[in-house]
Length: 78
Image (cartoon, rainbow, N blue to C red; front, top):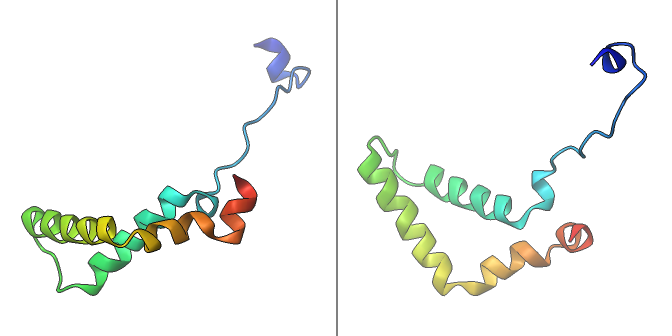
């Protein structure tokens, strides 16, 4: 510990997190956007219903899911 305090043992820092490169984060953003476009959700039950409806729609719209993985920035990172 004394070495760290004196700056002798720096170690390696992990890379910063880049959510824009993560296809899962892009799907989360898609879900958040879909929820915000709906009538205001004021209860947990309504929030769950809207989120489930959107996720079921994504299951039938595979192109939308694939597009999150095919973006040129994401392809480069993976």
